Image (cartoon, rainbow over all chains, first blue to last red):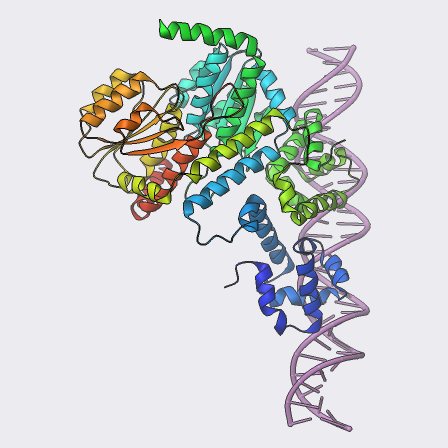
Amino acid sequence: MATSIAELIADRMDAMPTGEKRAAQTLIANYPLIGLKTVADFSHQAGVSSPTILRFIARLGFHNYAEFQSALQDELAAQLQSPLTRTTQPSPARGRTAQTVDATLENIRGTFQHVSDRQIRDIVALLSNRRCGIHLVGGRFTDPIARYMAAHLTIVRSNVSHLAGQESNWRDRLIDMGKRDVLVVFDIRRYQDSLLRFAEMAAKRGIHIVLVTDQWLSPIARFSRHVIAGRTAVPSAWDSSAALFVIAEILIGELTRALETESRGRIREMEALRGG
Amino acid sequence: MATSIAELIADRMDAMPTGEKRAAQTLIANYPLIGLKTVADFSHQAGVSSPTILRFIARLGFHNYAEFQSALQDELAAQLQSPLTRTTQPSPARGRTAQTVDATLENIRGTFQHVSDRQIRDIVALLSNRRCGIHLVGGRFTDPIARYMAAHLTIVRSNVSHLAGQESNWRDRLIDMGKRDVLVVFDIRRYQDSLLRFAEMAAKRGIHIVLVTDQWLSPIARFSRHVIAGRTAVPSAWDSSAALFVIAEILIGELTRALETESRGRIREMEALRGG
DNA sequence: CTTTTTTCGTAACGTATCGTACGTTTTTAT
DNA sequence: ATAAAAACGTACGATACGTTACGAAAAAAG
């Protein structure tokens, strides 16, 4: 069975009439972008008529042109997510572990390719205001990341709280949140209603929301001032939250640097308390 | 001047109305494929109307949607032609963020270069024995990782517990641990005495210890049956636990696969309980 | 709180695109 | 060489798409 459309074409190219063969050749030569354009563009580039293009893709087994384009886009999406596995070996021999690690690495890389320094700076500026409190909350699987971030932020500045337990507990804490407070939310599929409800209530109180989510964007994005989307797809039964974890670490590091002068004193003071 | 469309968006995202900002976020999160689909698809994914999408791309400076798509395709074509230049960013003035991300990626890569599939398999075999319970515990900053792992393991098998709170609480739980139980410990510098004491007591009771630590090896390694060392050095005030996080995810994934038949039933049952 | 401005979505429009029927041309078999 | 079959292109219809106009809603200014 042909795994990619390109291979599928190579297999059947010999058994094609001249016109369709030209279509196949131009598609391979400009793979896959020419296939994402219109039939007219494709046919003109190949020097054949539009119906020939349609007969060509029909011969490949697609029912219509849209289905063909969707297949190309899916393939492209997979390629963009892991360009390494494409350049290196097709890796049937490599272990599952190595493959998953590669996918995770690509997720992290891809995530930060679209996260601008500007965005990080803005969020850090928001979090570095000592006046306003920071509250962190997460979903079923992302709550540990919220905890991780809270554990660090607590050290570099005051007025940091992690919202643990059930939704009802969170709601009680809303009373203590002022208009200038910041709520950092971690939320990935499947998005929890409880988080959405809570974020909505917080937004209505004028609280700034920083959302760290997956590439499909939690509905909380509607109420969020800042949104960072991490890639989560890996060849596993679970989604990977590693990219979100790195986002948290980056924010921790940058905030620590922003509050360097004061945080240094805080850390020293804390260590004195622990040691004594 | 912005060289890529993604940067262009990042620059102007702040000055956009809420609806267009949502369009920008979904485009960045699904970059660039969503932009190659139809306006209707794009608008539906972003949760806004079609005109909002068009106003959004007009604000970016494009005269119509076709021009916008052409620009995306040109960018994509350049990327596909030289996949190597993509991994190494062309920007000469790389920010601290990118450097830290690179260091984190190298840490993860380096970590798994020295972790054998055999080791993973052995640990998974240990954890997949339904007879013995799994207990997870972590230090000050690594406890969230223990929680993360526990949250997943609880779903794929029974008899999983996360040791929360103070050391005294842990000790009380020791009574419930049998000789065949497994204790998964996360511990990085600065190694906590409390964890060491607890691990030692557990080891004396014949409990198998799986240790996930940093490259300098926690002293708990002495009592551990399996030790996985992750790299943690990054140009930041803090160490990075990302490699440990990925280790946890790998173990979660492999264990899920090992228990596939039974875990599938468990997951289905759980979702029924949640839905009902 | 009121007024003004901006922003957003519904609805309608014109166009480009896909898909098909049909006649012409080319190829193949007899 | 002739007939049959396959392939190709032109022309046309239906559909979906991008685009624009307008009124409602929200935000900002006074």
